[in-house]
Image (cartoon, rainbow, N blue to C red):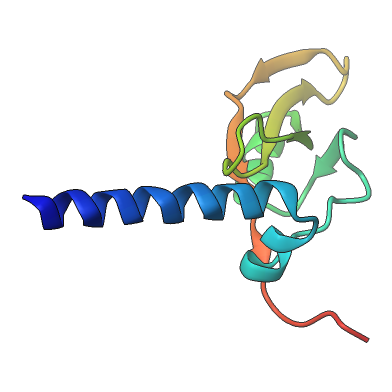
Length: 117
C-alpha cells in the first residue's frame, strides 16, 4: 500500500511540474508539441464554393453555396483552438439566404517540424 501511495505522489508531482512548465515557460508547448497551423488569410469572409459536390447539387436547385471559417481560441490550458466552418445557401436570383447548415467544428492542428533558420 505504501508503494502505491509513493507512485501516486510521484505521478502527481510530475503532473504539477509539467503543467507549470507548459504554462509559464514561453515556447515550451510549441517546442514539444509543434506549432499551430497558420490562420487563413480570409478568416471570417464568406467565399463562394463552386467546386464541391454539395455546391454542384445546390447549383442544380438554383442555390449558391457560401462557406466561411471562424476562429475560436481555446479557453482551457490544454484545449486546442478550433475552427468553425459555417455554410449557407443563397438564392442565385434574389441573394436571399434560403438555408443554413449547422456549424462544423474543426480542430486546429499542430504542425511538427523544425522551422529554425
